[in-house]
Image 1 (cartoon, rainbow, N blue to C red):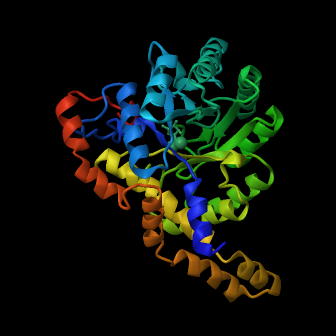
Image 2 (image 1 turned 135 degrees about the vertical axis):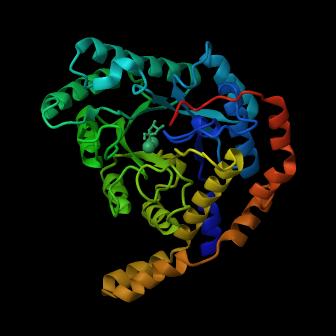
Length: 388
Ligand code: LRH
Ligand code: MN
Ligand code: MN
């Protein structure tokens, strides 16, 4: 297969999961700027996700966050998604916005609070059963602010206990995806601060526990593609929360701040054939669109992932392997850079035309009149519950 055909094939198979909360109003702790036309309930968030999928052909699933997306009937919500042409993706558990969780959720020193938190994780598995979701995504805000505030070791024991109980409740075809984050909201110690901690817990839990890499959750300068390569080799990479950052957990559009980093990540993925959907890696977006219009920003983000994937698939693998084997440092690096520096937009435009899509999904959205419709129909849209 020609490199260009291989690139198109790699991109065509890739599904990017969008996040329900990205369609709702969000902001920083300083201010939320409400936007016209944002969804008023989870049903409308799914409607927006379906618009993104219709225009890109590449966003077939949408992640929920519970209780932000709480509804009476999850079977009905999943049916609504199906009617709109999308499916429910990961169920994200939220154990970080209740007064009881001031000192932590599953690692709280109070066994009653730990019970409440673990019960919420179990409830999220009920929602997976009702919606057909295969992934339980866990991120814990747990940690401490002051040295001596709590026992770091005891908190690890409590975490392991809650994870084991939750893992035991998973169905045979369901996974637990454990996300880590360097710091925030805890500032002194975080209970799952890095991939090593997540990996160690997942290893102990079993095959269906895997690590999620949120690209915004690392110290500046961290080599994320190394983490990708390591976890892939160990069979422990469950997926990504894609976004980009300049300083901390900025949650900006993936590929906006550092498209080269996204390319390097996708190079590790493509060179291990892990973009093949059969490998089960979840390519999710975890972003907030605080000042830019949300649906076009999410479309742009999907395209950014596609562009990085196409470039990664254009890497001349034979030439790279030969240069590496020969110790040709400049040749190897040049092979990678040739692919990165290729403008893949024309290739992706023709791929979309072959798929019966508009070659420019952002422009197609602007022309569609969808924004004007939701602006007029939806009054009083929801806040994501994030950064309020
Ligand atoms: C935490 C996080 C996690 C949450 C989401 C809203 O910073 O990345 O994935 O579920 O943000
Ligand atoms: Mn995340
Ligand atoms: Mn985050």
